[in-house]
Image (cartoon, rainbow, N blue to C red; front, side):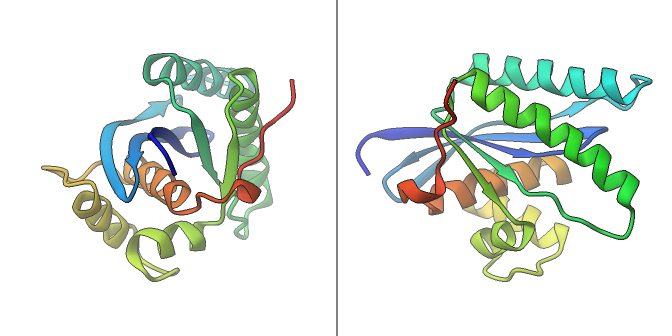
Length: 168
């Protein structure tokens, strides 16, 4: 890999979406930014996913990543919640396409394996490992830590076959 590459990691949610931006320079990773898009105060699902899309667009414009890594849907026992999460992921994928970002999707197990070395690591373990890997002075929130972990997973998967360039 040549040069510095900026990666945006996203942990999708229909009420809280985490984002994390890192830079990769060879084997070195550097923290740039992280946070959450809180949209729970907006009433309808349509308005919430619009706000996720709008907020993520602002993050992309501010930090200018070269790639976006997104956590894949975790399907639990609640189909209605999974459907709402799917809507949020849809607008996140749309944001990647609108900004011409190569995109990679990773399962929660792959993300946990990338940062903690164990695919069933707890949220707390992920937070601690993200803090250590990126040399942070404090632990980010769970959603922001998850998004940073997704970005780290993306940095670990450099091969072109996992990154899709979406055609506009």
